[in-house]
Image (cartoon, rainbow, N blue to C red):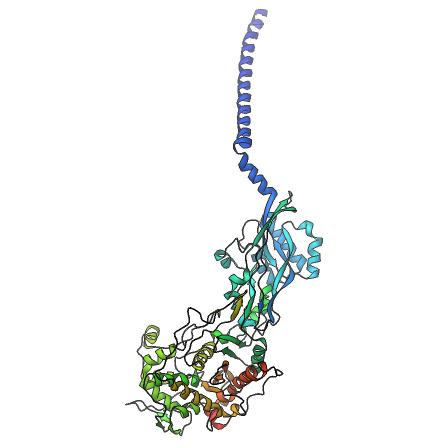
Length: 637
């Protein structure tokens, strides 16, 4: 039994097994120690610079410094767009533990209305550069700032930043021409220079603000700050100042702009005034306007919907984008085309029985005076706005020559130098109709264009521009809104200016001017009631633009039509003749005859500029347009 027990226990074997296991354990420990040492060597020696840089980046944060946006002034140094200090709510997503929870807390603290919550949450998720703050709310009030300060410990990554915010002292007066700035959206973020717009939350959306965005914005700066583990800035290590945007001085005259708005008196319409010799846009008004300050901070849903659904289209810039039939305001340019092409001479007359007929066509294209004007020459045709004369002239010219001659004055083109979003309207041609409708051009359509109807469409800006070129005797000066960008004046002669219009006989300009002066001063002038007691030579032309076409045997009766179907009233003018200082175009939508409802406004604009603004007299709004005579009420085309 004892011998058996001795056999079961073998100390030598157990010692050998122990030694083997100990050796294996030692090898494993040495290998692991070697791996750990190697890893430490790799991290601390080989990768020293890499991790040193990462550590430095965690300790040092680069923060963008947005530039101060340039200010905008009128020609007299009156401030039109300024920057006011405000407090904005921003959020850095990378520093927020639970984004949904944080947003819900902010909604409760700020008591945001339900219709604003969706937009609020979308702004928090808008694509940004890493660690760049997203703008949630602009222009916080004192109560909101206090609530956020009390709950700051619950809102990591949320900051209240003091910044300058755009403000328009005359928001509605200048709404269309200046435009406005608004929050940068995701599409704009893709095309912008991310470095230069780092820290910037606003960008020009429309008008001058958008046209001169690059100059007004400036260049961003930066600063390096040391931070703690919570990301709070401890001290500034380096600083590069931002370059502020350039101030902008416009050619606009604020008192004249205000005068134009008061003349329209809430009626839908537009007025544009240009200095012909310099191209300076003195006034550019579209009524109704809107409060552009609402768009800076972010207009609420209800207010924006109300603007969009308003039948008067307050967001639409009628002055530069509105397309209207030219009516009889096109006749001076048609007359000049006839002289230039040799189709008429100043003293040549035609007989007007009250209508015009195309060869081999029994349809009668009627003059606005149904019994006709009898014998009319060029000057009288302009004075009484005779349609028959211009039907005949249009037929002789043909649509091709009409198109080419009207294009020389800028119709159908974007000719203003720096008016953002300006429309081309429509100068029809054979090719245009073939491409648009797949149809041939008909002679009757040429007659309609000859009196400013049919397919022909113009903008008030185009009409004022063309009138300025006419006043300059064909010398082209491009209209412009900017007088100075920073300290650099905008030149009068611009490289993209169209070619001047030359005539073989310079006296033809005087023939056109005589006819346009007779419109206001002649015994039969359609706008003679608006031309009484003139202290300077004023040339003008009225126009009445049909909103819809009448049937063959139908007669126009404004009293039987709803207001928005009535004719538009137009007038274009320049003064003084011989030394033009101002060219004006006026359109009043659905007002009726241009002589009775637009001529008085144009006269008041020229009076204000020549007699009050330049003479230093008190600035008063002119009297309302006088009642029309029967000839003024009847003018058509």
